[in-house]
Length: 283
Length: 310
Ligand SMILES: Nc1ncnc2c1ncn2[C@@H]1O[C@H](COP(=O)(O)OP(=O)(O)OP(=O)(O)O)[C@@H](O)[C@H]1O
Ligand SMILES: [Mg+2]
Image (cartoon, rainbow over all chains, first blue to last red; front, side, top):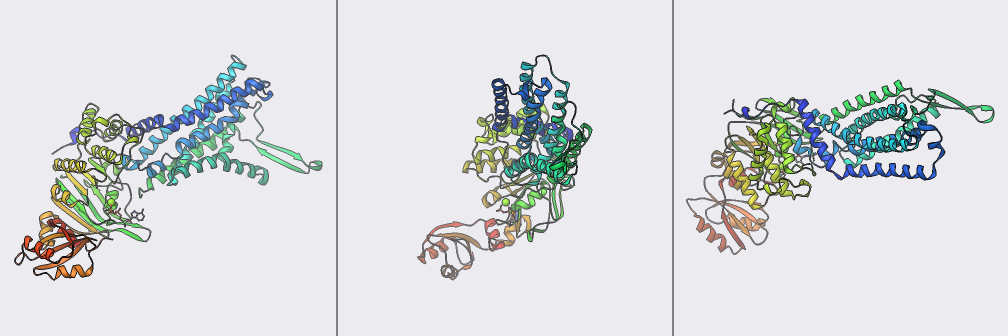
C-alpha cells in the first residue's frame, strides 16, 4: 500500500510562499486593509487640502526639499507604525485567539515557514499602504514643484521602508508574546508611538546619553535625510542665565540609523520566531 | 512499514495540574481506533501533542516512527488532523482554504480541484464552495474541517470529536466517511459510543490522563461488560440512592450504576432474568420509570471502567 506516489514533498521555502499567498489574500479581502487605506487617504487628503488652502510657509517656502520634509518627513513614521501594528500586531496572536492556528499548524509544515510567510504577507500589505502615502505626497510635491523630485525623498522612502521592516519584526514579536490580539496590537502602537520617544527624550535630555538603543532614534534618519545639511550628531544648546545649563540633542547618522534598524529587525525577528515555536495552543 | 501512532510515557502538566500522566500507547496497522474517556480525561491533550499543537512535558509522541516534537513536518507528512473545532481565515472560501492545505501537503496541481470538489461533496458543502467562510455556522465550518482531512490521501488520520457541532444527518455522514477510511489508520476521539461501536475495531480508554485499556471492542466488551445482560432505565425524576437500592434488590439484578441524573444502568443475571421480566419488575416498583433500553456492550464496559466523571 503506497500512497506516496500521489504526493511530492514540499520544501520549506515553498511553504513560506504558500503561507504568504493565502495570508495576503486574507489581508487583501479583510476590512482592516481598507480601513487602513482610508486612514492614509484621509491623512493625505487633509494635508493636500490644508496645504492648498493655507499655503503654510513651512511647506511652500523651503523649496521642494522643505516641502517633502514637512509633509512626508513628519508623517511617514506614523504611517509606518500604524501599518506595522495593524498588520503585524495580531498576526500570530490572532492564530491562537481566533483558533485559525488549529486549521493551519497541525499540517506537515514548519512553524517557522508559517511565521515567515505571515510576516511577508503583512509586510506586503503595509508596503502598499506606505507606497500609497508616498505617492500622495509625491503628487502634491509635483504640483508645487513640477519636475523637481529631490533624491533625498527617494532615500527617505527607502529608509522608511527599512523602518517598516524593523517595526514589523517588533510587532510580530509582540504578537507572539501575547495571547490576546487587541493587547498585542495596542502594545505595538504604544511602544512605537510613545514609549520609544519618551526613552529618546529622557535619555538625551536628562541623562545626556545618546539613545543608540532606541528603534525610533534610528528611525530619525527618515526625516533627517530631508534636512540639508544633515543635522549634527550632537548639538549642545546653552540656556538659562548666562548659559549655565545646556540642552543636548542627538541625531543618528545615516549608517548609525540603518545599523540600529537592522539590529532591531534581526533581534526581534529571531525573538518572535523563538516565542512562536514555543507557544502552545492551549485554549 | 504499516502506519503507526505511538505515545511513549507521554506526560503533560499545566502548572501543578497533570493532564496526562505517563501515557503509553502504540497503534499499528490500518483500522479505526476509538479514543474514549470522560470530559477532561486528556484525549484532546494527547492529540494536540501528536499534532504539534502543544509540547509534552515528558515523553515522546511519534507518527510513522518520527518524533513530532523534533520534526513535525516529517512526522505529519502523511497525516491528516482535525483537532477540536478549528477556524478558517474568514475571508477565504472553502475552496481557497482547502487549496491552501492541498498546496502545503503537496497534492499535485492537476489533482487539486478534483480532490477539493470531491471532499466538499462528501460533506455536502459543494453549494458553499465559493462563499466566504466568515458567514458560516459552526456546523458548516466543521463540515469544511472534516473535508480538509480527505484531501491528501493520508495514511494516518487523527480526529478529535469530528462530529462535534454537526446535525444528526451530519453525524451519520461523518460515520460513513470514517467507515470509508478503514484502509488507513484512523484515531478518533468521541463520546458517541454508538458511533464508535459502528466504525471502530478497537478502543483506547483513558481517564485522569492514564490509559485504562487498549484492545479490540470485542475483548473490551467481553472483559469489562460482565457476562450478564444490561439495560438502561430512564426515570421521570432524579434517581436517588433509595431508588437505586430498590432496583438493586430486584431478583436477578447484579448491579446498578447511575449513568446520569435520571438514568440507571442495570446489570442482571441472564440465568435468572430476561429483558422483559426485568422491565416488568422495574415497572412494578412504580418508581416513575419511563424508558427502558438495552445497553450496548461498549457502553456497559465504559460505565464499569469509568465510575465517575471528573
Ligand atoms: N491550558 C490549560 N491549562 C490548564 N489545564 C488545562 C489546560 N488545557 C487543558 N487542561 C486540563 O487538562 C485536562 C485534559 O483536558 P483535555 O482537553 O485533554 O480533555 P478531553 O479528554 O479532551 O475532554 P473532553 O471530552 O471534554 O474534550 C482537563 O482537566 C483540563 O482542565
Ligand atoms: Mg477534548
